[in-house]
Amino acid sequence: MAPEAYTLEAAISQWFSGGSPVDTHLAAAKSYGHYQKAKLSWSKNLFVFDP
Image 1 (tube, helix red, strand yellow):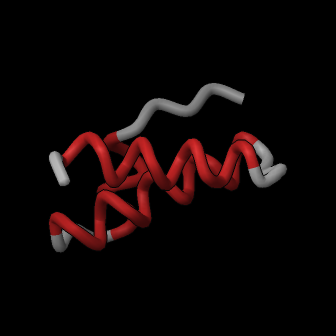
Image 2 (cartoon, rainbow, N blue to C red):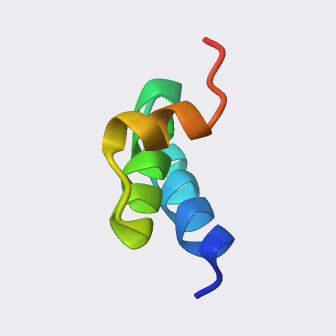
Image 3 (cartoon, rainbow, N blue to C red):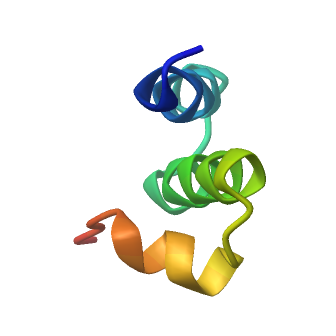
């Protein structure tokens, strides 16, 4: 998958399964961190989240 695809897939899956915006943000960050071997704290800062 392209780097954007797995992150987008995680976010959309979380959102449509009834997840909150916070859960969706976390799912995208976890997915990105997993595939890029990045720390979760860094991955969470990569994606903008404005509640």
